[in-house]
Length: 182
Ligand SMILES: [Zn+2]
Image (tube, rainbow, N blue to C red; front, side, top):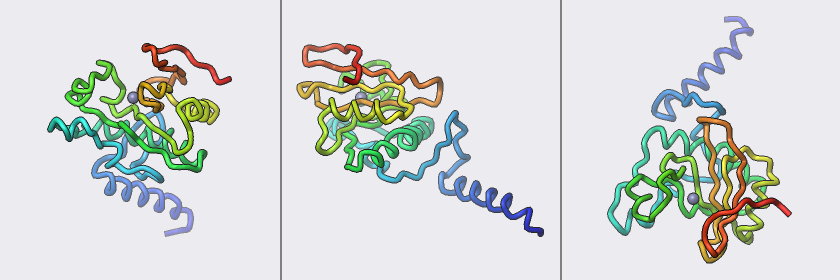
């Protein structure tokens, strides 16, 4: 073997290791995605109080897991690194049964593993939403919720079409309205 083969060999080995670690072929997506998270765990992405309370199955499909990984790789991990403070996932993946039980939107991106509701230590929803918008990260939708509606930020990411970077506010009075960083 000559030295010129070495980079190829190392790359092939890396792909093989990725294949073995992920338990299947690497996801082919519009963005580079892996299942190695810097700051988040699968447990917190899949935890559901409602599922536990009501005895509902909240097992993600393989496609939802690929989407969750893309959400973490492209938005949650980089955002956490930028903020330099813990981010809590209050709701990540929701199976259709769980989503129905909590009266989630019938088109909720939580069911595809494309969305998470998050809160950051020391930041209210307004500040966290501002940070997400200013981060320049490629989110699909970011929605800040009034404290009366949870005080969290819903953030989503998709690999199936262009991410919209749509920013909304969910006021106490209900509904959603466009929101611009002051
Ligand atoms: Zn949400």
